[in-house]
Amino acid sequence: MNQIEIERKVTKGRNISITVYQNGKVILKHPAKIPKIQLDSFLSEKQEWILNKLNKIPKDLPKKLKFEEKEIIHIFGEKSQIYLNEKFTFYDREKGFFIKNEKNLNTKTKKTKHYLRLLLMEKINPLVWKYEKNLNTKVNKISIRTMRSLWGSCNSKNQISFNLSLIHCPEFIIEYIVLHEIAHTIEHNHSQNFWNVVKSQNPNYKIAEKWLKETGKKYIYYLN
Image (cartoon, rainbow, N blue to C red; front, side, top):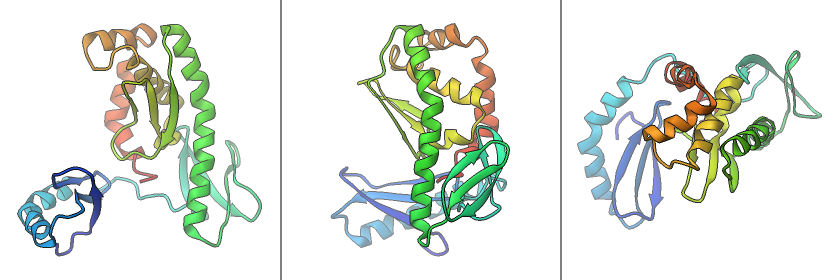
């Protein structure tokens, strides 16, 4: 499609779908054996819709982090400057975020994200234990990964995934997301019963919800 960069992903499903994310990425998902002419026809039909979606994206969304010298990163809600060095990767709240430089950009990105994942897990684990005890429930697995639209998810097996982008958020937001997902181990929906569980642990949870809607949409794109 002219002037629109589209990322294509082969799926096991039978349908063709297209999604425009807030960071400007356009993802086309389709089965492996779909003829090119059919995909081109689908994209042609969706061109105006895609352009409308792209035009509605806020212009002030942050750019994806490249982990470069003097780049600014938010860690636990506070701005920190990045410094490259030849020895180690380490975060110091007062001094900044020190990243071991690598000759290969992909290697540097992968290793830095791994460090951020460990840093976030240190923050999340005690909160999980706290709310498991308070709510008399059990989380069977915790994982941290990059997600384009969700802050967290909980499946029917009580396995919870958290968005790595939580590393950028203030601590009260991290705690709220942990509570929100653990509440889903009791109520796998957003019924009134679910919100009652959340409210029992955080009567002011709507403050966090407001922050996520107004500010969080920017933070979620730093790593995507």
